[in-house]
Length: 115
Ligand SMILES: [Zn+2]
Image (cartoon, rainbow, N blue to C red):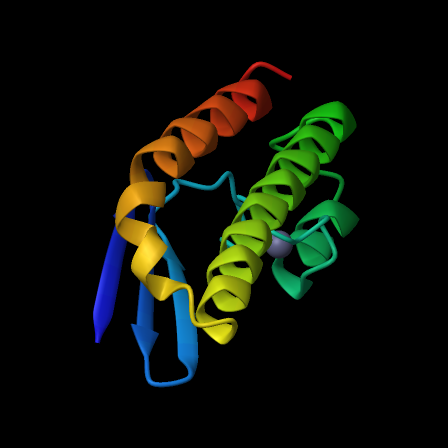
């Protein structure tokens, strides 16, 4: 098994399986702890029916969803890139690709953070 440690992500290659694990801290729904929840989980809807106020504004919820979607895209891109390189038998270039890829990931995550 080959393990590629990148900033905030770990990619593993085992035979034909390429996997990615994210170590990013993601903003989550304060009720269900799911990052993709748009206040549609049972816990949050139950809370709102009694008239209590939401812990996040609509704008904050939209921002959280957008941030998480952007992180998903970064993760998907890394996975697709490694998968494609592996499929074409170019796994050996990871070692030389690691530094520029790490730099690119940090730049993109920084851009997401500043949006
Ligand atoms: Zn939720």
